[in-house]
Image 1 (spheres, rainbow, N blue to C red):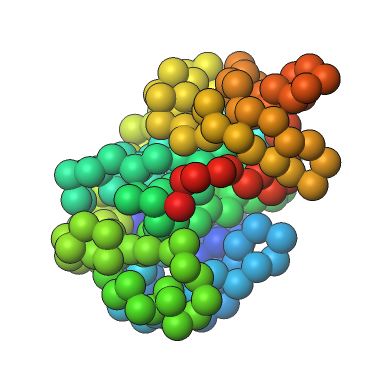
Image 2: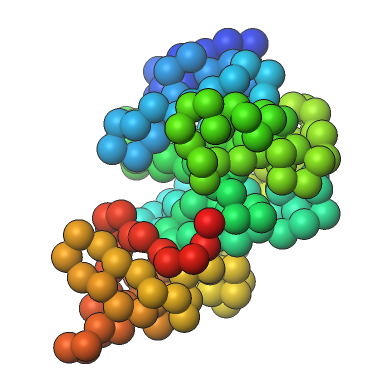
Length: 237
């Protein structure tokens, strides 16, 4: 396993995909200058060179529950942020990490086939040092960085090492145990629970995160388990 710095790259996820044949389980790359970062549904992740950690890790070992890798990744990101600034974040289901009511982290997990086996990539971007007006000027009022929220400055290398260490520790248990291995910690960090939430098709109260990692929403007609899609949460920002 290795952690490699890239001075500039289109996307750390894309770099791993292009080079997967030469890489081993646990290999990771990071940068603070990602020129074509991708988010969920093809969204662009706003970047300020020097202000953000972008790190992607390749997972070649079998995973008991690969569908919940994004949830695992949010816990690892929270571990890293806590180590850097001494303040834990909150997770907006499924994998948005908030700090002080601001979104500071984006996660994109992907799967691919390498030879006869499946591989997985977790890509994590953590806002480190952008000032508050960076987000205001770009029309992202709910965005923030570790610095803009806490005043703590973290170096890129320290942040990368903290995240890499957290991912390795978390994945060791997650690979065999799946979501069950992290469920209690995830639920404790999940900001959705007990709050009003809504999607395009339902509105209710987030009652639980079930054993499959799904958000259970209690409505007037019963409970519905949600696994994908956009979920809005009242009062978290």
